[in-house]
Length: 118
Image 1: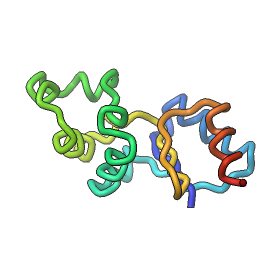
Image 2 (image 1 turned 90 degrees about the vertical axis):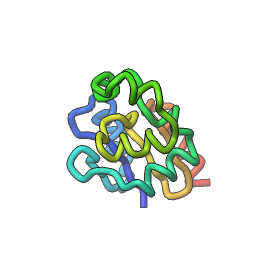
Image 3 (image 1 turned 135 degrees about the vertical axis):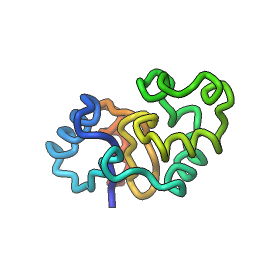
């Protein structure tokens, strides 16, 4: 099952959802602001993508963390912070069931789904 993680009011997430719908790709949407994120899911993302890539250091949520918390950030602290504040995660996260991908561009998604059908 393909899962797209994000928040519905994010422009990039909206574009990804629209692209998936236009391509008739079945997927499940996980609104992590409403449904949250599991620690195990974040740990899997960090193992695959690196916590530095998954955490959005330009987000409002990041800027609202205390300077001490930001300066002491590591994988364990980032996972705890993202469970508490899921909007720290870059959006969208696409889980194809075989691979994980951050962000959205039409070309990148086309490549992902072309490889998936081979």
